[in-house]
Amino acid sequence: GREKEISIISDSFCRVATTGVCEAFLIRGWSGCGKSSLVATTFEPIRVAGGYIVSRKFEEISSVNPVWTVMAAFNDLCILIKERNSDEELLEIQHELIRVFGINLPKLVRILPNAKDIFSTQASTLHLYQKVDSELTFKGLCFAIQCFMSVISAKSRPIMIFLDDLQWADNMALGLIHAALSDASKITGIFFVGGYRNNEIQEDHAIFSFIDNLESYRIGTTKLDLDGMEEQDVNMMISDALAVFPRNCRALSSALFQKTRGNPLFVIELLESLVKRKIIQYSLRKRRWVWDDAEVSGEE
Image 1 (cartoon, helix red, strand yellow):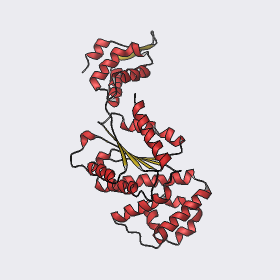
Image 2 (tube, helix red, strand yellow; image 1 turned 135 degrees about the vertical axis):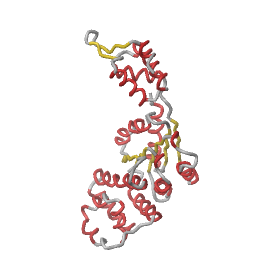
Image 3 (cartoon, one colour; image 1 turned 180 degrees about the vertical axis):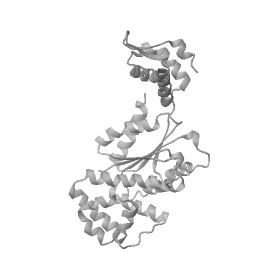
Image 4 (cartoon, one colour; image 1 turned 180 degrees about the horizontal axis):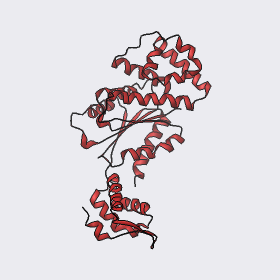
């Protein structure tokens, strides 16, 4: 039931992959409306198309500064670079990183530990720089990521970065994302996708200034409001879950749609609850799931 939305995300990625521009795609909706599942549906076709995908999520309660969630995504990217490039391509990347960072190369390895794997064939080169001081300010951190992405990003190597639950991100975390997207003269082919619960943010949340900054830098930004599924989509969902024809579960689907407003997570939870309480149960004699529509409708 999300074919249209999947197509919009896929089209945006294809635009990034074919033109080399950087774009942002922001999905907002209530908890359980299917934001994460929707984006995950696009992962496989994007991988097949040659895309590099990294995905992380922010946590409401965490001892880790939100900015390090963003850094973890870039750190994961180092692993993909190592895995998906030939020795010749890695050697070219190594040389370019050395050229860009120079004696500051240990700073990159400090903030992105997996970057050392890119240099596995040149460990001796890294050893030459190990004694350099690697303290970084936030401004320095942003600059280091910009330098790293200027080497790693390429039209031939489109990168999708998916960060979920942006409602728990702060100014620094969003500022780092903006830094990675905004250096258009050096960084190409980054497709940033962010999801957030619009019912859990205040008017002064950092997400709004983040969006304003993206637009002021003329970074293509698509905003998608994800509502509950349509009733016919819920009908197909129930039909698949219970292995019955859609017409045979239309009344059941309608009742679940009315009770959940089409929220996919709530539909699944309610369906599981009905099965657990044996309001919906499997009949061995009839070899199918059975229920009483009136009883389901009467459930609170």
